[in-house]
Length: 115
Image 1 (cartoon, rainbow, N blue to C red):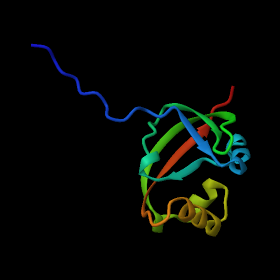
Image 2 (image 1 turned 60 degrees about the vertical axis):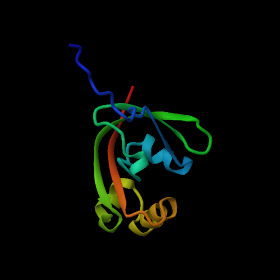
Image 3 (image 1 turned 180 degrees about the vertical axis):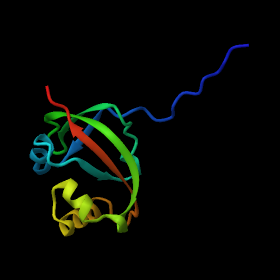
Image 4 (image 1 turned 90 degrees about the vertical axis):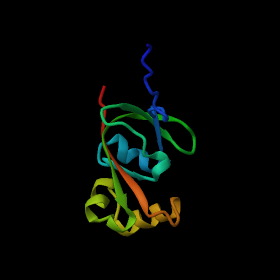
């Protein structure tokens, strides 16, 4: 009897976008996390993804996904702000502007892939 292997319902993302003004922080290796909603939480640790500008689609660099973990909005702390390379108040405002009224978020930890 043939064995049926279930196929994953979601494909593994190979690209990620950041606001253009954040790209220098990603490229320099200073920004090492991004906070996203559930729709953008399907990155897989160990994979390398292409980074581009949200506004233009212009390629910036490659990053390696290290981890993906749930994070409630109320749990965003100074620790996360340091990893985002942003002041805490600016980070919380940015997240609430992008994802209004969404409490369930995900923190994606990554590292810059050097040539």
